[in-house]
Length: 301
Image 1: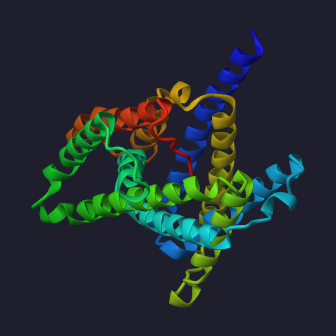
Image 2: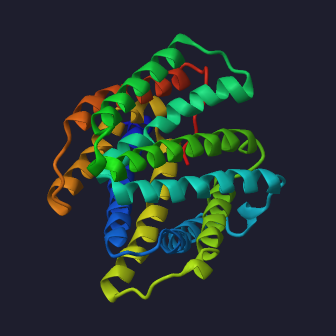
C-alpha cells in the first residue's frame, strides 16, 4: 500500500472504533439512567472523565497547554453552551428510548446543519439539501407517528422530541465550530466544550445528586472515558481520510447500538425504526455528499 491508502485505511478503522466507543458511552449512560442517577450528575461524570483522554492526547501531541490559547472566548462559550444543552437533551432521550433510536436521531444533525447554513450563513439551498431534508423528515415521521396517541408511549414521544432537540442543538454548535475554527485549534474547541459541560453538570449538584454504588460509579466513569476516546478517534479519522470516504461507515456505526439494544437491554427493533433507518441515513449521506462537492463543509463535534 502507498501512504495515501495506508492513511485512508487508518481513518476508516478509527471511524469504526469511534462508533464502538460512542456506543459504549451511550450504553453506560442508559444503564446509569436505570439506576436513577440524575441527568446533571451523569453529564458531569461523562464530561469530567472525558477530559482525561483528551488532555493526555494533547500532551502526547505536545499541544498542551499551548493549543488552548484562544482569540474567540465568546465563540467558545456559545459553541460550548449549545453543545452542553445538546448533551443534556441527548442523555435525557437515551434514558427514554432504545440506544439505536437515540443514535439514529443524532444523524439529523448534519442535515439540520446544512439547513442552518442556508438560514444563518447565507448558503445556497441546493437540491441536495432539499432532498436530504425531505428524507430525514420522512424518517422522523416513520419513527414517531406510530407512537402518537398511545398513552403508554408518552415517554417515548418525549424521548423523540428530546432526541430531535439534541440534533438541532448539535447542528447549531457545529455551525459555530465552522465560524471559530478559522482561528481556533480543534484541541481548544474540544477542551473548552468538555470543560463547560463539566461545569454545567456540576451546577446541578444543588438540585440533588444521589449516592451511587460501585458498579454505577464505574459506568459513569466509563461513559466519560469512552466519550473522550471516541472524540479523539473521530478527530484522527477525519484527519486521515476524507469525509466522503468515511460516510458509508455511518451505516456500520449503527450496528453497535442495535446489538446493544438486542443483547444488553433486550429491546426489540421497532417497525418504525426499520423504516426510518434508510431514510434518515440517506438524508445524512446526501448532506455529506454535498459537503464533498464543496457546497458545505460540515465539522464533527
